[in-house]
Picture 1 (cartoon, helix red, strand yellow):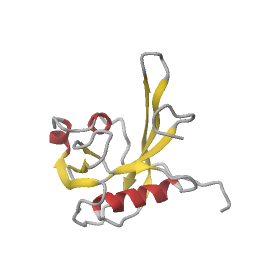
Picture 2: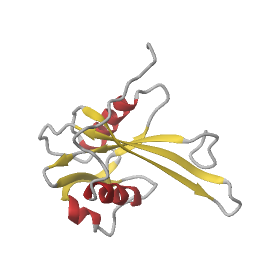
Picture 3: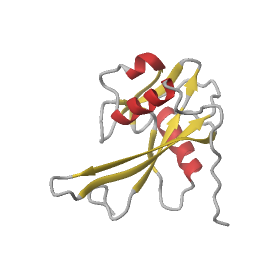
Picture 4: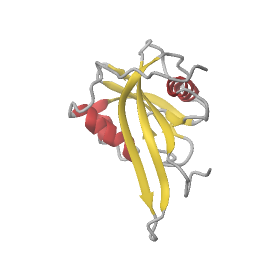
Length: 157
């Protein structure tokens, strides 16, 4: 199944690390939104648990090995072409990550990784649309960062 004209929605995982009044962002190395600042993340691989995907993507893009705490946000993106066909359909799950105090270093899918004041990050010209929306939710207290939702895998394997 391809990313364009998919048969089913694709699941993406975003990772969120807040340190005081700052948010950790990476500058995207790949499309979509190449060159824009965004929370670290990527696709959940078939058979991969959601929290394992969050930990893997976060480590790959920031060099920080830490633990996921739970879900804090879910968004979806459905883009249609002029014929009303589904061009893209993503379900994006944001996972809050534990802050272990480590310094981020841009990894394989990132040009840069650094902390931004969260209020200033919202105003960046080169920020991804989904990250900007997430920051707006955080600043308007629509996301509870104090009680991330645990993820339970029902598969016995």
